[in-house]
Amino acid sequence: MSSPVTSRPGKGPSQEYLLLDYLNRLSGNCEARIGIHVHLSRLKPHNRKEHHTRVAAATFDSLIQAYEGQTFVLSNSDIVLTCKGAPPAEIDTTIAKVRFLFSDDPLGQGDSEDDIARFCTRFNLETNYEEMVKSVQSMHRDRERRLRQDATLGRTDLGIKKGGRKPIDPDQLDRLETFLARADLSNLMRRQSIVAVPLNGYPQSVFQELYISIPDLQQTVTPDVDLFANPWLFQRLTRVLDNRMLAMLMRNDDSTIASSFSINLNVLTVLTPAFLRFDSSLKALARGTMAVELQMIDVFSDLTAFFFVRDFLRERGYRVCLDGLTHHTLPFVDRERLGFDLLKMIWAAEMADDLSGKRQEEIKSQINRASRARIILCRCDSEEAIHFGQSVGLSMFQGRYVEKMMSKDRVV
Image (cartoon, rainbow, N blue to C red; front, side):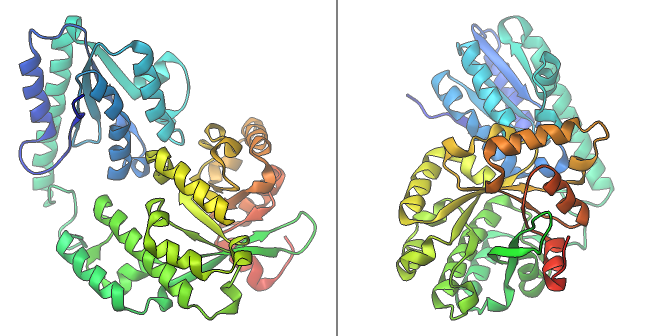
C-alpha cells in the first residue's frame, strides 16, 4: 500500500497552483473520485494556527492512503483533498473526527446539514469536475490578490509587520537550545495554585502547577524574536523546556514543591530518558500526589502514543490531567474511557452570558457526567468566574483572581 500524499505550504509553487495542476491532470479520469474542501479559513483566528491545520490534515491520512488520495493545505488554512472509491460512511466518519478537533469553534458546532455544509463542501468529480476547478481557480486568484495587498501594505509573505519581532528560524533555535542547556532558568519558573473554594468557607490550596514562563523567556532572552511564529519550531522548543523543567525539579531543594504539584508536558516527553531519570528520582509517595498535564490537541493528534503514555503514568502512580478543554469540547470527552483523573476547563465570560439559563444547565449536566470533583476551572481572572463555577457544581479553580484570593486569604 502506498503512503498518503499530502502537499503542504513551503517554498516553490503555491498549494493553490499545485492543486490546479493536479486537477488538470485528473481531467477525463474522474470515475468514482470525490473532492472535499474543508473550510478551515472560516474558523476563529485562535483556532486557525498552523498546528491546528497540520493535525486536521493528518486526520485524513488513512483515508487518502486507502483510496488513492491526495491532500493540499492551502495558504488560507483550507484543506482540499481527493480520493477514489471511498465509502460515504468512511468519509463522513473522518470529517466528523476533524470537526471534533474544532468543536469549541462555532464552525464545528451543530449537526444539521447546513452546519456540516459550512464546514466542508463535497464534489462528485464525475459530474461536478468543472465546479470544483472553478472553486480552486477562485481561491488561487484570492491568494494572488492577498499577496498584492500584503506587498502594498509593506508586509512580508508571512504577514509580519516590518519592524516587529522576526519569526524564529532553525539556526536561532539551535543557538537558543545551546543557551538553555547551560542557563539557569530558575528565575523563569512560575507556580500557580489550584485551589478548592467551597461555597461557605476559606479557599484552600490543593496543589500547584509548575511551569517555565515562555513569554518571560522571550522577553528576557530573545526580545527581537517571536518564539511562537513557527509552530513546528515552537513544539521543539517546548520539548527542550520540558527537559530543563525536569532537570530543575530533580535538583530542587524547595520542600514546598516536593509533592502536590503538576507539570505540563508533551506526550512524547514522557517517553524520553529525561523523564525516566526524573521518575527514578521521585519517592513513590510523591508520585501519588503529582499530576502530569497533557494538552488536548497533543493527545488527540496521536491517540496511540497517548494511551501508551497514560498507562505508563498511571502504573507509576501519577495522576493524568487533560488540559485545554472548553465548555464546547467537554461534551465530546469521556473522562473515564480516556482514563483521565482530572480535566481542566478554560473559563470564558460567554459561559455566564445566558439570560435563559439553558447554557448553564447544559454545562452543569456535562460537568456532572464527567464528575464535578474531577474538573478544574482555569484562567479564572474575575470573581464572576468563581461564582459561575460554583453555580454549576465546581469547587476547584486556578487563575489570576484565585492567586489574588489566596494572597488576601479571604472568603468568596
